[in-house]
Image 1 (cartoon, rainbow, N blue to C red):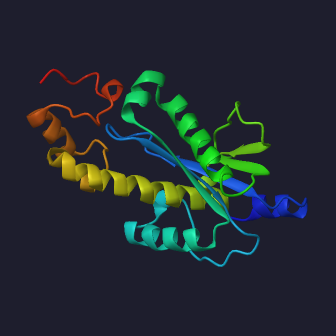
Image 2: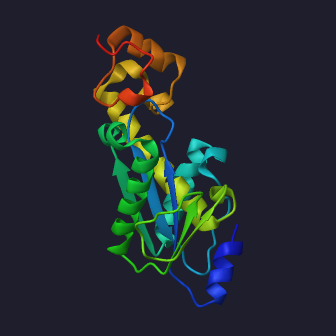
Length: 201
């Protein structure tokens, strides 16, 4: 998990931002990206792709990452912008936002991303296929982004309780579709993800 970081450390590069996003697939809610710079010496066990961890473990690791990280940035792009520019462009926008947020806290010398290249960013970067399972920095970003987005969706559930956002986080579960069938869509839904459903309730 540290191969990429250690290779950069050996070149004298210390401020390596791991970047990842969550929320590309849901029917509702934002896409959220995180950018995380970890120190040279990292003493956290269990950092991995957030999808392979339990919610409890992600919460624990999120706290530990926030305690030791040299800097953390977040980017959030809402469902309206996703509908306007498409999910891939919204993902890239969230990542750029996360990097800009991170730059307020610490410098960035190199960027490691999960399978994406950001053409508009001048900092040297590398997109790694399945990067959240190969790079500790990307995995840390994956965890931070996932915990942040999950908390948002739980808060949204308090406003829109008919769609079970607290449990499905906006993904297309049976309970979620049942809520859409009964109540129609709400202001958090991505209309471009629901073209086959009658949205005029």
